[in-house]
Length: 320
Length: 320
Image (cartoon, rainbow over all chains, first blue to last red; front, side, top):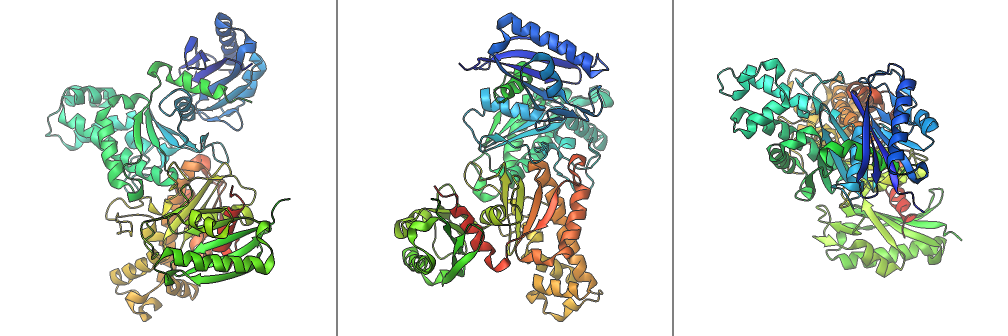
């Protein structure tokens, strides 16, 4: 008989969240531990194992678990390792899947957060039934998971789908966290929205905007969103600028894999039409004629608080 | 027993070439007809069928043919149709595969020229044994065939892989044949090379170059190649410029599918190091750190005169 449950693990820089998930994408129980508490990864994994065993015990038994899926920063699906993750306490290459599997006794698969989101949308969310789509995660950075022929695109080394780092401005581009300039992420992440706000405020000292009520270095994308919802013109223009660059990028992505849909996931997606309308307009305007009016733009259908764990858990169904 | 032969058909605007091919990629016999001779597609297909039957009869019998593969302008793999090909005499949607199959009695599959090239490299050429690679065809235009997980990427509508039409210059970009501006194809096709030569000649009236010996409107990429091989500085610079834009584009393609190799195919690939060196330099310089020094840049290994027929024939092995 098919095993009816999987375990999803979302490894974040601050917290690690674990959930036991059924076939319909219901999280039956969940819990979390502090990721950064343990300087040594073995100690962290021991605490994580304890939590996993406790949660499984609350709803079922180990032999009913098909597999464990983990979404981690810099997670490599092929090697099962976390490789040089800048925001985790453990340096170098961590054979996470293997180490956890030895402790829990259930097979573990791992990928990066954006790929986990894509598998989650395909299994439980907006991409159910689709074979060709792209998930773009708009958070502190911009990530992506690309699905072609119903399979996640990992590339020859496991690192495919870094669409936050295509170059959108070849001259005078913004510095990106990756060390290059002009990347999509430098403009269209939550951080990018705040940077755009600071640029606008500095370059237009005469413009009236409620964003001036906030100390300029403390402005966040949430502040810009709140101002835009209150009708602030500059805030709305910041979302227009952000969406336009995303739409330009999406037009190029479509030329690559011709997806049925592009799905927005993550914090910035909460801006709704404020960001989706300019994306749609710029994407259609910049797209090759044969692709126009064919690509759906959708929001994630995974409940936000559960999305990361659900996405990771979906990988658990594929574990061999 | 496995059938040992396939038929490859390369449908070009001027000629249609047919070859009978064995499993090692040997063309046993071949022939051609004029594509543009027949204003009515039925007449064209009748002549094509006659040629196919004659060629098969020269080396084998029909029951030894596994399938027929055709590479055509605007060929759609899913529908088996040629859709709105601007350089063919038959307008609208032509159900080419179905019409030919009815006449010859052997299953027919069809795709566009660049996808056929990619399947050809995977079956007989530089991509043997690879599961993730990209073929870029540098001819009158720029085309591409993308392979992920050992499968050609067709996208949800059959039109994926239009990498000649990603936007490389968002401001003041060159007009492209597709009606937009700044496309890769407008710079890095054979036509693009000739355009760059004309721009350089006009913008630098003082520069000495043997390209001035040719009437400016008649300059071709072949003239620029000949001049560069003879040591002409401006001609070499034109190839450097062409290669740099390709390399910038390749860096973005790698962020998408992380291929093991990118393979250059078509007329402009004959420029060899003249174009490959600046591509390599610009690609590595523009690439995200995790991808550096991992992606092979290769030239097609299909013999040039046979490449199009071989590529198309490779699709014949996949026909169901």
